[in-house]
Image 1 (cartoon, rainbow, N blue to C red):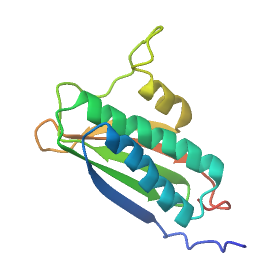
Image 2 (image 1 turned 180 degrees about the vertical axis):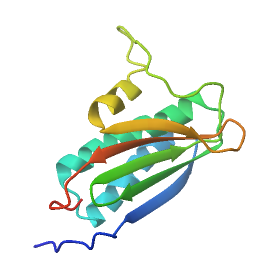
Image 3 (image 1 turned 60 degrees about the horizontal axis):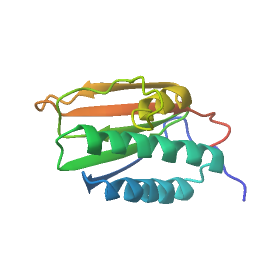
Image 4 (image 1 turned 60 degrees about the vertical axis):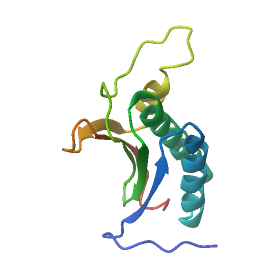
Length: 142
């Protein structure tokens, strides 16, 4: 199957909301994977996006007082952006030194895999959006 180049202004967006529970992490991965397959993403990009979705949703579930989280995938010409909005919590995202412990490595992975990442307050209390961007070329549509 040959994919035609998309117009320069083409941006694809997919968002979903889930309860902020640990079982929602697997559901977020499945929803993201289904969408990326529909978009025709390369399996290597898909695997990276799914890992980032998993880490960002896990952080929102574990480190905030949220009842719900919203995950958004936005694929443009040169970047694929993953954003997870929570309802707030005691502290913002930060990379923690974790030593032997498995916990705390999520944002270290996100930092290593992504071209950029960060967090922005939403203006609603302590709620925030944690986002990460992966670079990909226009010649190889996601």
